Image 1 (cartoon, one colour):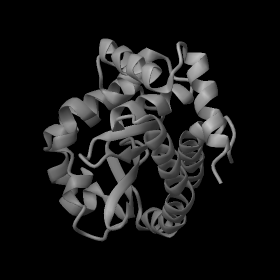
Image 2: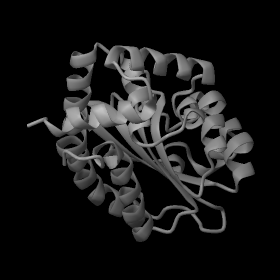
Image 3: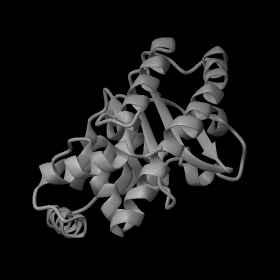
Length: 237
């Protein structure tokens, strides 16, 4: 696993997970995102959902979402279905539905929560249109059956790999957590504008972080940075 593909692994895992779920259930849109300690989205991978909609969700509607992970961290539910916890009549009265979901042609929502040490670390959200109909009890049972497998893969493959790599680079170059976030996206091939969008930063801030990373790692260009860090990751045991 110690190769240039390493930094892309999280997104590959997320994309393949969405393909798996979308192949089992008919959905209009879906998303797989990591959850930062402050409950903000990180590393979002979407299916049939544009990034601007996701940015609007995080800026304006996340706090109105009844399935917001912060509301469910204390329970042990692995699959949450909006209509089951609120009832259809109440869902359709929500500003979250009227102002966000409905204009996107979305009506029904089910989320899969993935935990580590009791904390929600990732979410797959599945969305269906009014025409597609609600998630049936059988659909939800499929998700509950699949959830432990994906959670196991997330915790035993992705997270240990990522944390080892981040810790190695952090200790070697004394990078801050945000600089590590920027570096991960650089390694995945993201341009500055995409990095700014992913991390909710201004473009000048991204450029400043990059200059700090260049200085700390002793490189002058993006290519030199990628080459140097990949070489560091290859020597990990």
